[in-house]
Length: 266
Ligand code: F6R
Image 1 (cartoon, helix red, strand yellow):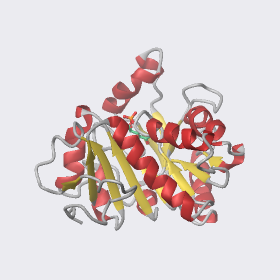
Image 2: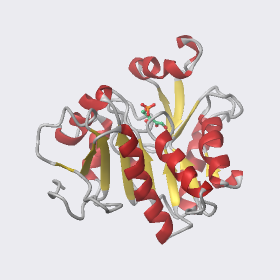
Image 3: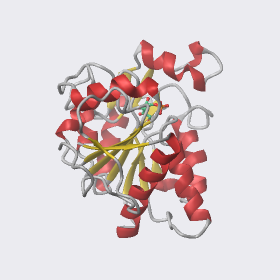
Image 4: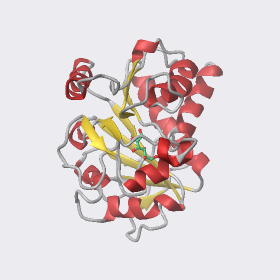
């Protein structure tokens, strides 16, 4: 894994936006996997800012969400479909069909999961997957102890995740209990993974993912198997790391990850 440690949450957004923008410059039709939640918001706003100033064209992207809550209609303001409409579809200037979200309002959720896997495959797979990490080490909503080779499916949210996500809802009891999420096996098939984490509350999960054993109790640890996973952390999120495997971006360089610096463990 390439570990990039930058001073602040704002630096995480800028660094990660550089990685995404570099990829889009190489391939305007990039297939981007998009996490929701608070972690990637700064990346999306920075990309939208660059588009607004005319330095970045995002119109040819295709995006796939990681997950969607079961029981929230796409129009519900807390659904991930609505989040992506606010943060990506409109600010990126995308045709709505270019952002796909698992259809968690279908009666047959197994069929919806299977179709989602097929639509990712039909798009040629995900080129670059943006991830956040839960305080319990989940990625997507693959909670401890998800199968490390799981595919898109219905899962139950853990009590910790429901508590963590209560901040997005009016009342704790409004947090959905289930979701449709890409599996860990699905995520591992992305050609590149870019996980961002900010704040001390993520420090233990980040340390377990990076320095712990690969284990279902910390689902993000499966990224140790990914050949091209970059973690961009602010100093607080990196504060639980003990090994000297972090490095800072080389000054004046958009994407120093894995190409210089002090040479992260890989
Ligand atoms: C979101 C997702 C989750 C979040 C994680 C962190 O689509 O799949 O894994 O990335 O729960 O959430 P935040 O960023 O809100 O701390």
